Image 1 (tube, rainbow, N blue to C red):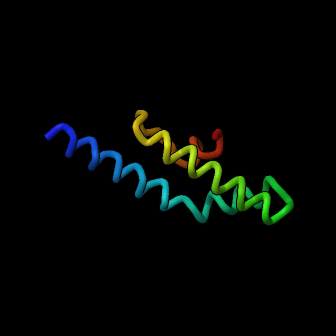
Image 2: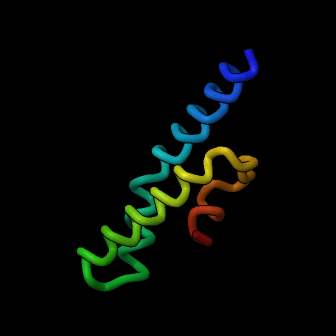
Amino acid sequence: MMNTKHNEMAEGAVARLLEECRWLAGLARRLVQDPGDADDLAQDTMVAALEATNQPEPSNTRGWLATI
């Protein structure tokens, strides 16, 4: 039962991160002029965020993503 609860929490965290993909891509484009580099930055950030889904969930997802 504990494992199911953990999986549900992780799935919720992943869903919230995926909701921010477009915002993250826009932020990356504003930070990096080269479109390819901006795409790489957004992708690397999302990978790092997805790898951290076992940590306590941030209260401000966008703010947290911007710090990665």
